[in-house]
Image (cartoon, rainbow, N blue to C red; front, side, top):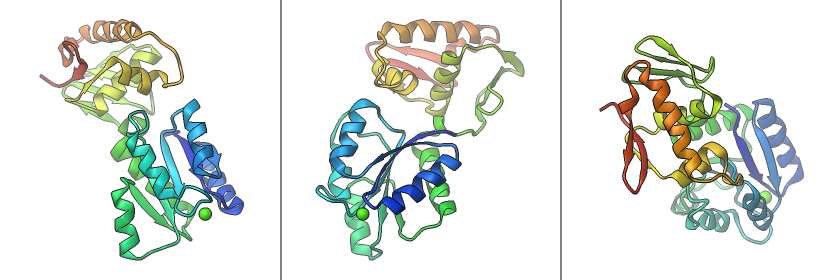
Length: 228
Ligand code: CA
């Protein structure tokens, strides 16, 4: 599972240690030293996860987390806070900011990687390599194979990502804009009707095993996937 992780940390040695280990684990790392730098990077591209130090020059990690949560575009980004403080009061204060998890310094690289994986699994399951099963449909991110009722289904790369995202968020309605953010990346300009084109292709591929009705159009809202 390769995720783009934004590391906001002002201490060069810790920033370097984190980057090194995240890259070793296969992630793409972007670094910022202050909250302001982080926001200007986010303007260009949304990361899959933010690793946020508590003590930063200028705006604190808590301020940054609150700003991320308060903005429509960045609200959904998983946040892990790095902190040197351990007492409960601070932890609770942090929880109010909407952080997904906390790591107390000093931490081991193994713990860091494990926590990131756990948060991504919970908050962005389409980022993980876990086999996904939904009714008669199976998708394996590792081998890039999809089967319906035991038969292989051929999908293009975009349809594959689309299906992976839908299967990891069953029953939820997603708008075309959300699909564009999640599948194409929010910094890429693609017209909304492109989503319809790929949904049509995906349904067509699922027709081969009679599973096309798993993808439902929700009028005025977008698309949803369910077993019904
Ligand atoms: Ca710091």
